[in-house]
Image 1 (cartoon, protein in one colour):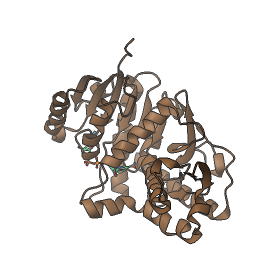
Image 2: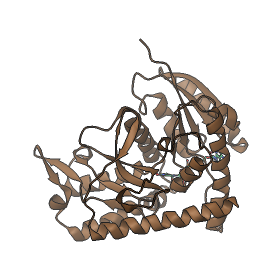
Image 3: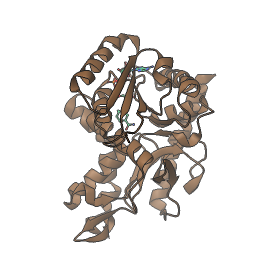
Image 4: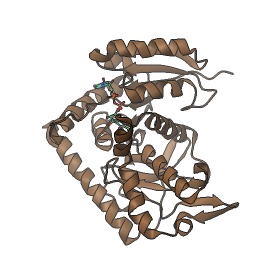
Length: 332
Ligand code: NAX
């Protein structure tokens, strides 16, 4: 029997990530090849015409799984009955703007969109925040949508996770699908800590530690971390535009694994509400290694943390604590 369609909201849908993301969702990349979807696309009035153009292209692409498209600048219409919300819309930092001004714009966007989701989204709606500052936008959304369970509000660090897998696969000379269990700890920013202490590669049928295969601690603790942290800037330099296809693809990975589950023995990185695991301050949205089953994520417990990792994990937590304080100061 055909499944009922799932309603997926994409905010900022007229932007460049939106343009890459909506066809992936309509093709089943996010929720599977047998899951019909209805797309809800939200953008702001200046982008209304462009948004309508995206809707026209979705119609023209004749996606068999796409059972409807709502393209709107009305946040209530956009949020009504959605099961999944991918929050890509936000206010970008423009030249000469202070950090606090950008934060203040995003706090007010996420506060009002949180209220709309709280009132109008389907029960148990799952939320993924992509727009920067992603962790703190997600935290604000959580604060202003108190009836949405905190476990349902997450932010995207899967792109960073996938970037780390890609770098290891290139360095070791194996397929990316043979690398697993890297970790992104902390903030989706340049203080994030890409950690390969527990990562492995399938090589000649056996699982081997990335550390021993790479056998260059200096590279793993230095250049590797920097490359992953700075990858977004490198893409901007090369493309004159920020990452879009990889961000869209990673957003699909994030939701797919959350809804359909992570493969046995594999974890992924998600920005989730900290419960104090690994001595990360509770009350931050912090990226952890998680496994997913039955639509719920669980932080992987018991991983050994050495002194080097501890320092990096604390530094990114500190940045998030500062961001949180800045965001709250914008509310008063
Ligand atoms: P674009 O500027 O191309 O698109 C953003 C879209 O959001 C625009 O169409 C804009 O009109 C819309 N928008 C602005 N305010 C809105 C509001 N209040 N409600 C609904 N829509 C609104 O940016 P794009 O390259 O698509 O990037 C989108 C966001 O993703 C940015 O904040 C960016 O920094 C962030 N990123 C996050 C990543 C992550 O891994 N977490 C990686 C990629 C990306 O940099």
